[in-house]
Length: 337
Image (tube, rainbow, N blue to C red; front, side, top):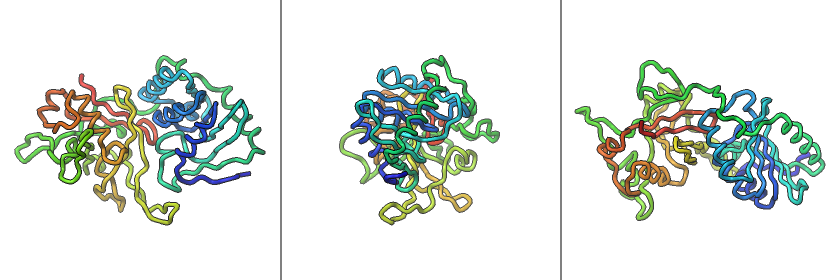
């Protein structure tokens, strides 16, 4: 029996329930480290099961990220299910008793919980089903292993490696080098002063304080060569208020230094097969200031400094390698060898 359907603001509902709990147990087909961290920050005892480990394994980037979360948050346990479990169930407890159970389609990830209205659903179960939910939890938990019990994760996704930015022979359809520069008619590389890394420098866009906003451009060649890596923008989707939206689902980026960033593919780029694709990737903070600040910090620059190609040369790298490691979660490499 279902008491209520939740179709929007799912993350707010989950975090509110967690803040009123002294224990939360979540089984999720797939997980995102940012969403897991947000949940653990508001509940003193949090257990999360990555359900599809038994079928899909886990990328090394994701494994390192979740293990670091458990090291930095001793009250957080992250388990891997050795059987493939695609279910999503959120159980909230107070004084050792269940007071709410949610189940539905939404994974414990930024994409699952922060998707636009009606994209995902969670249902509130009636108390009559609490005992069944608890029994299901016990069954799944008996076949799980602690994430920290594996010194390294068996990688079953395409190998993570450096690739050519525009290679005619695509060796890994889920990994691409994204240039942070343009090339002029004389084949001279440069960083635009009012777009890309310097997006916040354009008239009417720049903030008076905080980091200068940035985005990573997505070219037509990226879309054509890596169709699995860049999702098209949504077809018209109705919100709960009846308005139409083409808003993209949010994603999470795990950077090579372990930093976790909530991000989004935005803007209107090229059209392929009657589908509109995004033209940029940026942090999901309403403007790209988090990305701009992060890149400048990595480069040792002031948070509002205009980035030039000479700065990229001084840093030692002029591309970012982006890899899809699971639905809604990407790895990004801006390291210098």
